[in-house]
Image: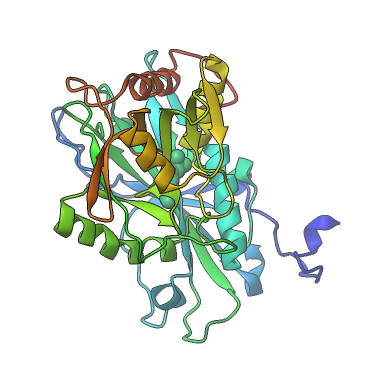
Amino acid sequence: MLGLFNRTGMRFMGTKQSFHKSDLTFQERPNLKPKPAADHQYTFGGLSTDYMLEINYDVHNGGWQRPLIKANEPFELDPANATLHYSIECFEGLKAYITHDDRTMLFRPDKNFERMNSSHRQLGFPEFNPKEMTECLKELIKIEKEWIPRRPMHSLYVRPTSICMDDRLSLSKVEKMKTFIILSPVGPYYPRGFVPVKLYCDTNTVRAWPQGFGDKKIGGNYGPTLRTSRMGNLKFGTDQVLWLLHDWVTEAGTMNFFVFWKNEEGEDELITPPLDGTILPGVTRDSILTLTKELRQFKVSTRPFKIQELMKACTEKRVYEAFGAGTAAIVSPVQSFVYDNVTYEIPVDKEKGAGKLTQRILQMMLDLQDGKTNRPEWQFYV
Ligand SMILES: *Cc1c(COP(=O)(O)O)cnc(C)c1O
């Protein structure tokens, strides 16, 4: 029986390969929080809902424990908790939407939970069955449905997280860990229409490197980037960092980066760097690549390109538009970038604050998330 063996082939009697939705229990809380007012101005991550999903793992106690939906409330950590010291932690981000026909939908949660498993492998956490996790999440969403604001462009942000629960200062194999999911109602990323961002290229720091961990959503990849972001803002008033790896363009802030240009061969091309281990494999990135290839209107490429190519294209006025892509904003138009003290402008429609393709991609994604266009393999109805 495969289920009795762990990854190294050693036998762990009774250690479960995954938790199961059929074991899910619900612990009702005595009273609920007041829901926000109908005109509440949502800030990203500012509110949490009543309940959370929690699944503990203990290698010495049968592995994965039963999944539990319980009150979202603070929990205690030992000061020696290994996560606090070594960032043995990973997270995910996805959203639940109310569709135009009043159904509740998760957008491609299978991709997020596959990616979470890859973070788990990196950190030495046990893997789980993404289908079982999706089913548990659906139950949580059903209970918390009233928290999803019934207003255009609003949604429920879903934050799965896994942390090490071992209380010891030695950096060693994970024995206890906890996976949980919390929910936060959110409003539109751009409440008053697109606000194009300015990017800062720093030639002294890299976010990710070949054979590193930049393609994993692990906490250690994020905290240390704040300094570069702050520096760009202080020196040039930029909003986010355009991360380079020895002049190779990688990502914009915590978003994948796309350029729509006329390339050196004179072809119209939408380009983003390939998944070579230095790029976070974004679900939005993947969706945009699929949707734009299906348009068959221009070349869609995943290949490496250097910042000098982008600078040259800007100077020669071959850049049509550029944008970041991620769950929070879907697309985030870019208006300029600073490299070596020089600012390069990227065209944006003055009125709309974004280029035509950026707007079109946003609309295609919104129609999918609103259930107005169908793509059953991406739309998980709750
Ligand atoms: C989360 C993230 C993205 C976007 O991924 P999505 O799945 O589209 O939300 C891109 N880059 C980085 C560094 C990220 O952390």
